[in-house]
Length: 440
Figure (cartoon, rainbow, N blue to C red):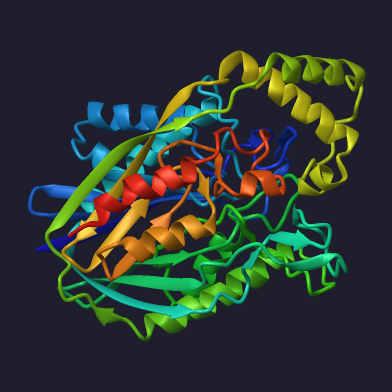
């Protein structure tokens, strides 16, 4: 007998807590909308597993490890059965979480409370599923250019664009979880591919996933939890280069959230029960990711650049556009990153946890580390034995882009050290080690 329970807690930070997602410090100056942690837990007999989704930019490894330890100390033996996932909002805290700050400890307490409440809410449940092919707001943001290289976000209506480098995983999938006793909708899990980076600035927001939830709730007339699971989107965003319309604003987050919300609501009317949703099984593996090595010459050049540009203004938003223009701000930021990386990370091997929830022979939910390119998710789905395989990136605390091997030499900012800390081949290694977990 499958049971399910949902809960949510507000985790909006106080004014002044830093936001992540760009290359400069951004203490927040207020709130556009609250951000939350949401838990969707499932129990089958003695097995409890589930998803804990944070409306944050990312989870640090230290936070993820500390949270698991705290849960075990509280008697949660299932702490290692949970997928801890971040939606990657660029107007929320994330990689800069400092364990010495009050917000770090408040976040731990809210997450623990959310998980405990979800367990307390467990009821016999039925899973129903629907999906569509077609994501009207997602585009591969890496483009082949006329000079033969690849550019990320090359600019709208750029005449030198030839074609996108790769595809988009355009599946939008919905899991509806219904209370068997009273046929009440308990919660919704929505899985789709896009970057949560439409707003910019210094005001806190859950970006389009937050507006998606609000749209679905408005359509339903109930405050049902809607858990967004963002599938691998390392090379995907919402910018349509064939349009001149501006797409950096809160209005854009509302547009995407409303559009996705309408799709999710429509799919909720089309769901069908999963025939075999038990037994619930948990599978995990730890993958060794090899980090890049900084040479003595690269370190010397970085130190020289850092000294020459030491007075550069870094108070404005430093984004991917600075990478394209190679602005002084980005050159200084990259130089400092190289120096710091050489001292702390160069050549290291890091453990990256992958976690899978298997529901009978019908459904698998997969938490992947880092920001894998969309092609990685598509290949894992293709090789999975489960007819429904739903993937989440930015899970279990490892933060780095995971480009395909061939992308490193083509250009674009994702494979560069500022965004990608690992050597070529790690994406392919991820596929090879995840697929065996998805055998029935």
